[in-house]
Amino acid sequence: MQLIVHGGAGSAPDDPESRQRALDEAAATGTGEPTPAAAVVAAIGVLERAPRFNAGVGGAIQDDGTARTDAGIMTDEREVGAACSMPGVRDAGRVARAVMNETPHVLVAGDHAVSLAEGFGVETEVDLTTERTRERWDDLSPSDGNDVEERLAWVREQFGGSDTVGAVAVDDGEIAAATSTGGRWCALAGRVGDVPQVGSGFYATPAGGASATGAGEDIARMTLSRLAVERLEAGDGPETAAEHAIDELATETDGGAGIIVLDDEGRVGSAYNTEAMQTSTAKQS
Image 1 (tube, rainbow, N blue to C red):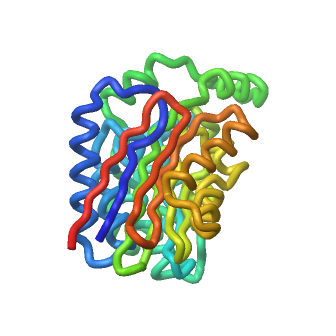
Image 2 (cartoon, rainbow, N blue to C red):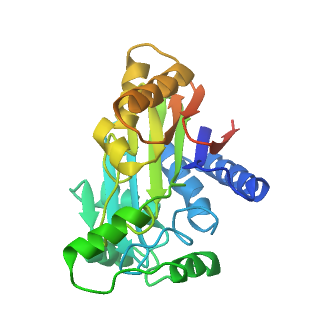
């Protein structure tokens, strides 16, 4: 099993060492799983529990004061599952995998996704906030009125952030990619970014897989993960494929993003145009 994991693209973290330890743990945890799909869910699960990442506990808070999670997963056989806009669900990656394995659907949203999570034994009603995120929210002054224009003006002023987490794994030619997030700070309640959108936040084919992070709207406009994997299919190596995808994003948008790529031979690549993006790789025979 070969695996690469990322902890989000954005500004330089104030605690890179502890974040790197968590990423290393995530990568090592994933390689101990029996299949690539299990590996990527296990890897991002470590980060969904690590409060310094924007996924699971410690994720971004939307403009109504609620943290919601999104995740998506895809395999080389084009099996896809995603879940989004889930309050109180830490293990979003597990819900996405349940959608993929247990339902005839690709994406389930909101309270219905939360009910599905509960039905498959995923813990719900988890407090996704931390002291750090509560303090950040308390420092803001959200609009509490019903005026739509006033609310949107506040959202545009405050909207931002990144640090989505993701992983890509390969074993004996089988591939899976997964991404999980708390979204972006102060988004409209119910906003869904790139992460649960197949081809945008995650993508996999027999050639390889990719997981993206950063400005979700721009990633979705470019279907960034699909762009990278298509370069693998055209014969590029993972590093070139990652760089091409980020270059395309920079040409067409003003967004900051990062991406990790793993091909069917276990070669890894990554690229980003933000200040930082931490990654970790691991391999187990």
